[in-house]
Amino acid sequence: MNKRTETRFLAGHYNFFLEVLRLLPICWEFIRGFWMFRRIGPAVTVFGSARFPQSHRYAEFASEIGAALAREGFATITGGGPGLMEAANRGAKSGHGLSIGCNIVLPYEQQPNAWLDQAFTFNSFFIRKMMLLKYSSAFVILPGGTGTLDELSETITLIQAGKVHEFPVILACTDYWKDLFTWLDDTVIASGALRKEDISFVHFADTSTEILRLVKSTKGKTRRAENSDKTQ
Image (cartoon, rainbow, N blue to C red):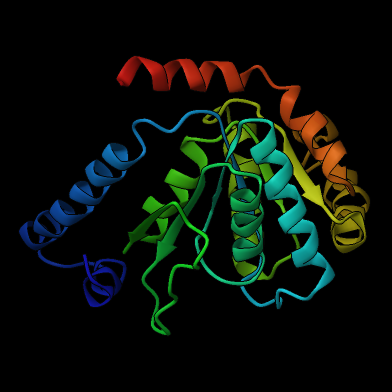
């Protein structure tokens, strides 16, 4: 499915048979994704902005996280683009770990970064997001904009709804996220729209040591690794 086809698919009602035909490339993209990820072992997905330069302190932290995960035997999965994604992949490579990117075809032609052992390019956002979630046993959320907020929100929602196992969601750089979660506490939770226990799997961390402790606390690492072994 190319960009124009996906735009049309999401634009509203069309002829029923035409809609069914448009599903075929979507199904194929799912199949291709399952095949490409079939042998990936324990992994952690790192979300974050594409806009921070590699010299930024957030990028330096992202690289440190990728290296720490690699040393503990985790693959690092990112959106495959520049910025903090690139920094995390660079760190994974420096730590001699598996570095994976799930790139997306965009109007401004985002290119996969140079630090990927495996680069997968998707046309559909929702398939790409599913792949970023499906194969990881923890999720590290670095500073970012609306795209990162979307990934954070969907990850929390799917875990809260029981669609994804309760793996840790780790907000890296507390200073960046604290106001958002103050609002959640003071407004959303206070109003009764959300319960505190519904997001008990969300954690804050400011060092790679803290992040590793949280990542290693989940039993999901073994479960997903076992599932991967069965398919090989």
